[in-house]
Image (tube, rainbow, N blue to C red):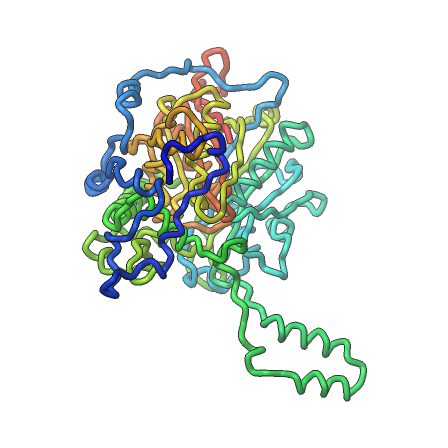
Length: 529
């Protein structure tokens, strides 16, 4: 590839990661050697020389990962004054509080429930936490990914089950792993436009009982049989039956447009950015260790107990399991076998859970006596090529949302990024800290810089806390708001990648305002979504 090639079409270029197909894994001796793969991509060749990240995770470091010297030098200086990012003539939107059920490994305590049961539990927990009158809520929105066909509008069924009025509208959205992000941003738009004053947004996922269909041939035969009018027609149809008709159809785990699983994409991405197996395991161990620490210290205050019908009350997440690098190293690759680097230990696990947040217009919240936790200021969605840039959304969205807010990375006090895979996180951090990547693939003059790890996912992340597809967005929002409140921070940034090469990006801002008081004149968190 010619490095002098014009960059005029930089935004349209795609990462050439196809060299990592299975057919390219064999050497002349017939033995695959991961280290000796031919780097036919200029991106891969260049990124192999970027700074490594191998040592920090062993000590759960609190230093920046590959941050530029300019960023480090300016870290102690706040470039933004203590002021809000309110926009003229637009209503302020606040989040009063949010809750979630404990996130559990699929196939455990929630396995006999239905999605609306978990969503109802989250709504009931939110009502109990906030004491908001049910008849005050104007609208309810929930996100989900793998829908239960019996409750396709799970938001409505959960709302009715939680005791909300049948006159309260509710709808369900789906946008892969950012479904609850979409629910929240829809709520923000409804309030900012004056359509609503009080909206509940949330998300739910139940991976313990995903819908499994008959094969298409079997479905067609059953439908044809239901339309047959005579015994002869029925016998004729039955005679066409074959045993392979009984093969079930499982929910798709691959991108429809590329037929590639997200794990496979993560493996190729990690290789392209020269992220080693050890580095990925180290980051996963960091996530579990920090989550365990936060859990033990009672920092995961958004979790509400849930009495599972016929079983014990569940009080905490059950996927937090700090291990050792030695034990993690024993696991086999999960996607590109046998020489991939993505394993069950450095990937997020299938999870059941639900979450909900209470979002209001600021004037309504104050009139009701609430002291909101955060402002919800703005939001941004971006999309990339679903094959080679599937998981790089945070890299593309971060500089855009910062520029929109007039902030820099140094202004951010709390970062919360969705952890789909360790390799995905580390690849994004490297890409964000690469001038070459910014210039060649983003059409930008310079890198935005990578987040310092002492501010990054310090209460754990999806790798350890779990990832119910439709509910993670609300967890990210509340983790950031609670962190800013506890630490007295001013700004926060949230990002989550999703299937289809999409991403939702938020920034949170907590600003001290002497001219305004929420009864106790404490920090006010504001959120750019």
